[in-house]
Image (tube, rainbow, N blue to C red; front, side, top):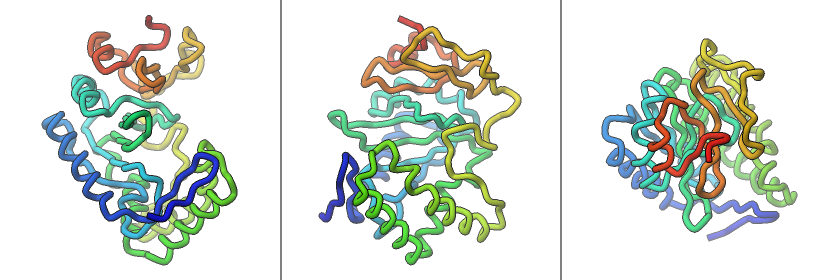
Length: 249
């Protein structure tokens, strides 16, 4: 399999086994949390036949309310999905890793926002526009060839992703929407977002956040990941899932 890599980035030519890996993970998630997810789909570049991608399976799941995930944290952790924070505040994010190497990312979003999620819309567009999928693949190879640091990879392709997503949304009669989501988005519940002045600062390794009035960003005990979860989830549940609250020993 052809691999493009430099500076820690690794892009592979399309692997026809990726859909199977996604389906296997989806089945495991539904079995682990029966009735929780209204839908789970394979998203991202690994969901587009023929598209080069990082070998990480992206999934997106819909729930009625984000805080419904709380009672299922332990079951998700048992399947390798642990809370993670990368700055997206309109969803819950979970990461699965194998021997420290990330293999899956699960985005949990509200059912209300499901129909207009950029990742789903762009995936469908690229599946039906191979010429634009090829442009996207070429851009990824250019980024790797330039020696771009892994942490800058997403930003380096944002301009093209924005262009393609705008086209995809226009085809559906939807207005443009920024694709850079590591900030508040229109899908947030504006009524419950806490102001910056209310954010916690007890733990220098964990910054506070605002998914809602009872939500903080937490540091995971295992692997140093951060997870976003409602504070009303019990400490016992969080500990079983390998998470601690900012400032919590």
